[in-house]
Image 1 (spheres, helix red, strand yellow):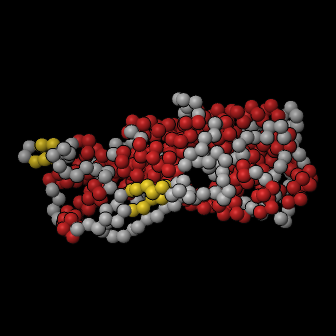
Image 2 (cartoon, helix red, strand yellow; image 1 turned 120 degrees about the vertical axis):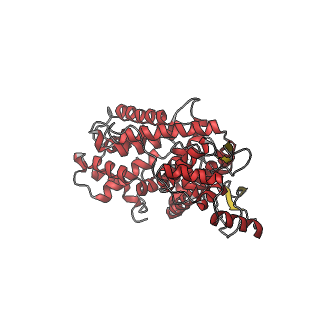
Image 3 (cartoon, helix red, strand yellow; image 1 turned 180 degrees about the vertical axis):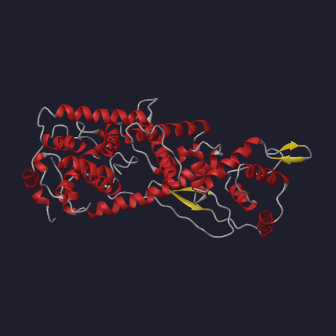
Length: 419
């Protein structure tokens, strides 16, 4: 089993590159936070990176419009807004004119007009649908730090928010995260000694980077794999460093394009790390991480770019976006059910962090669905991947049930130490 004992210590192959280039391209996010501007999401193609760069278009507002908005926030609310405030108060929540105006500027609620108000006696008020929307937003806003967080949390809580601000929030959140993620990937890639980068394929180098990120970001799974390996009698006296290197080796090949199923030493370590034969509660996090990695190995690889993802997201119709949301919720429920031993049937997207997680999954599946059979569902893909791993581990068990010993592993990796 080939494992480079690199002292550096991991998300898997980025879905936007079938064969990752060297060095890895990055996407750019540029924001202008100037005051008194109209904010518009726009995509600028960056030929050098293939990823869209987000900017905030600087459009100075006229003094007349700014003073109008200021009066709206400070003055007496109009009858339509008074009606919304009474509805909110009846639900036990407070609503201000300033908050309504912020939501209108973000496109979350409509502005008053002939197409958005209905006649109620001698007054014009918002219809019931808008009142329900406002109550839903108020329910979510206490758990949201930004307008984007509010849009995503309301969307995944099935509040009927307009899709345009939701798509803008998805794009800003996802691509901003990808910038930070790719920066980490590039740093880890450059930390690999040049002699190793040149000696090995790009696929192996980037799999090593992904494994190092997994080691940092999925600590529960790493802890479970380490504990499972420790139960092997030949590793009972292994040090923490030695066990971590074995876990890292398992993750490297889980992040590679394919598992080395003919490598008896690796498959033995994979079986020990996942411990399918042991109590499920000792390995749930490890199973989920391994299944997520292996699902990408089972898929057909296709080259995409950030710009393509952005354009596909912006072109989604409401029905399709809602369908993707349902698939993501189903996948989260499946993982939560697995993690809680069936005690939890539904994952609660009840925080900004979980809403951002769900949003990232939505965009990832939006692209990944094209390389899976038509009609595939991410929850089923995850379960099929886990079963596939179990089958491969069971098939390899006939060759060697114990895995290589501690001394053999040290001998095999000693040549790379200190590089």
